[in-house]
Amino acid sequence: MIKKRARRQIVLRLRRTYPTLAAPTMNAKLFFKTVFLIAILLLLVLMGMNNRKTVELSLPPLLPKTQEMPAAIMYFGFFGVGVLTGTILTAGGKRGGSRAKSA
Image (cartoon, rainbow, N blue to C red; front, side):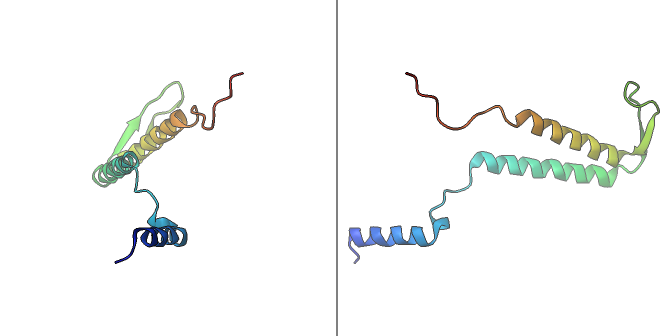
């Protein structure tokens, strides 16, 4: 039987040699966000496969003419705009690091 101190030294040596063994597991929040994004992408693929008819998009202030294109391309465009909007809204704002010392 290995003594407690020797076992601890072996564990510390293994952690230095193989740092991934000591790495923490995946964050649950990150896991659920990843699953959610994959589910949304699956819905986007299903919409693209099943909506092949052309649809019209009318946006008078920005587009002078009515746009006609397949529904799947419009879904993809709206999804892209939504992802960019979410990225811009969540980027920045939080500052890391230490606080300034008060005198």
